[in-house]
Image (cartoon, rainbow, N blue to C red):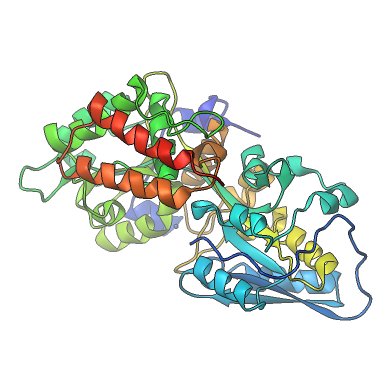
Length: 458
């Protein structure tokens, strides 16, 4: 994988350490699902493709991948004329919808699942989805085609339960309003900016009346984003086995303290605002702790309002880490499928390079540009030369993957994500509202409450 920005091999990027764009440039160039109660079919004995015509349904979201389906379904039909792929697309909460489909035995053969609430793991443990190891072995499928953290995310007890549909490194993007920086005569942040310098910039760019904030960004109240953020200070929510809470360490206290300082001492960030909206409305100089897919809403906002924006990676913390957490989406094989061999071909198809590239090239309103979780996609000229978004921004997105942070470290070993998040939200809300400071005693109590959740059985 070309690491460009991070190792300095791409001089054009290293010289800037940032990607800056304006309206002129842009115009030239954006619940846990219910387990199945039926009999589980495993993939321990892969079956051959049927010679008769069969239909494979793919249950997925309606809008975020809408540009991809008409591009990738037709060539699949050409290669497998006896397999009809039928996208089964749903609006609203897709995890709730998937649970209802499973309960009614009407879920698709292939299912797009989401790791935010450990949906893939819980569906597998509930016997609604099957392990893929036998199918992978039969086809000699090389899992090195995907980022290792994407493959690792789809494992339970050493078994591969999903293939990556798409994925990205989150909480490491820093967008800034270049127009604000230019008007204030301040050099915008780059790869060498420190966290302290970021706060100093924010102080200069904040107006006391609240009409303009230096930073749009808050302390995350969920384990995934909090993990990606605290890693910047070499801290984590859990230990390496995700069995022990680690929020009462000096490193974690420093991370929490940085936010408390920004909120309540320097007063450069509104801790309770909708941070991306604040930035898109031109009311904040910098947006932090997001991923680069925010470009899909920032880009048109900047164009319509006539301001310029730029982007770079979030500053390094005291130990040289920028933080980050890998966010994958998965494709799984339903235990209810009567055509698992054919469904497996479809699952591989929609997790391959060509589909991953089509995902990254989407441009319709409401779509996501998160590409396939593969180095060959992120390095492909088709991704880097997006029809809407500037190349330097695409390169930043690619190079953030070289940070190497994983997804697994952000989830508890027992997959009690909802319960952990409830504990975190209560504590973080107190810090946001200045009802509590992140003192050693406060974080010790928080750590104990998280540990109580980790002590629950799977």
